[in-house]
Length: 302
Image (tube, rainbow, N blue to C red; front, side):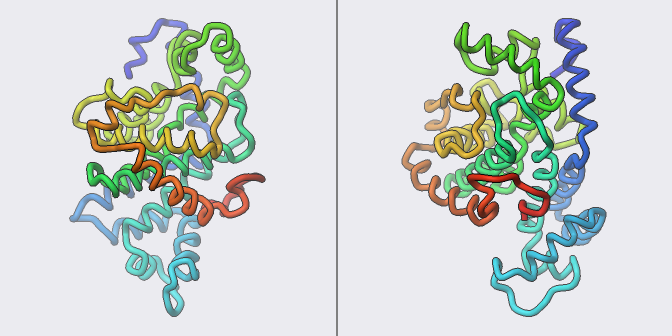
């Protein structure tokens, strides 16, 4: 999105939201470089090890998991290189993506009716769902789908952080006028959270496909055709996560599924029913007691 396309007042407000959002600590700025290392055969494990080594928290989490009973691996592991070898580069990337993103997702924010940790729980549910839909259909890379699901609603967190009280106007308008939450965000602010999401991911230098996924996941038929498969798995996963009810804000139940678009990619309700219990299992494994109650603390994400 080009800010110059907005009305002057909306453009000024959008810039304010972006500025405040980008000041939130623990932004997952390493992820684009890690994703590039995973997908580039000329880089691979060496660069991944170097990038993980830049963050002591992620390094320790990776080593802890490489030594945990979760993976059922024998003997001890005391180096990142061995951890990557044991777990696999793609598994290590997913661990890191979750760890880095959750730090950002647990920032205090209001305005969407969230309880502490709700945004994180919901984002993880969408990430797992998108990964599973990608695996079952074969239409998209599961790792890219996971990352897109994890970050799809990052603009909501930015708005909640920057304009928590102004979101009350969106809520009031939705109650009085009806329509979707996104429509009412546009009416109140002159832009919506999907535009904020795409703006933030652009600033963080994420791949174009993930920026597009964040921008068009709610209305996938409007997205560019070369990203349609990714939009399909994110859109399906979003609906699945909403039906699960984990971490859904008050706006979440207002969105409608584009069933025709999903069917065009072979995604069906039956697949969703099969995937749902697997998503629940993965969330339980990842979050434990913080799945349904309590505050997600740094470290719970891994």
